[in-house]
Image (tube, rainbow, N blue to C red; front, side, top):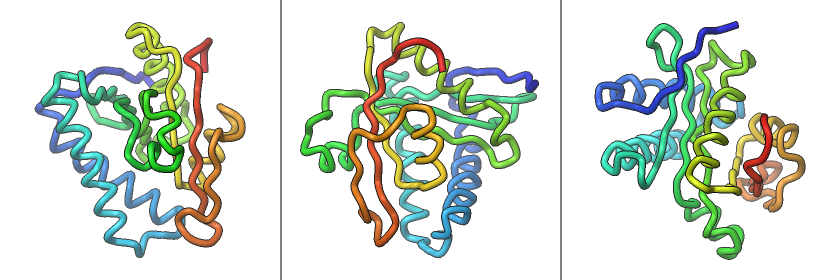
Length: 180
């Protein structure tokens, strides 16, 4: 079992996190067969960097990240904040009051080792401690969608062919109950 440390980000983590986002997002796009969509890839990287900036600037009030580290190397991230514009638009604002959990990334070398579950368990605890009993989560990545369906069941919203033929977008409502 990995000896994983979970903690909040620090200013000195910014450069490593920027590299981490780039590595994981490029890997994800390639595994999804969309690695050639460079504008979308860059936009995804920039959105994660902006979320991190928002977290650090607000001391976790607007966005709230947790990091997973092994031997002081960042191997995973998770964050929560306001529901994205995409979620609000796709649900006709039906769940705009919910917090969104996102940026659930695990370095390719550490995937399928329980790091994502550990991050999710810590996020559940964080949300419950803040009095948050339900959140939303979305994904347009088929591999991630399969993971979320196993954990949370069928999505509350299925947007077929949202990203093109055969590329769906899914949105879940999740209660912060029990353990992962």
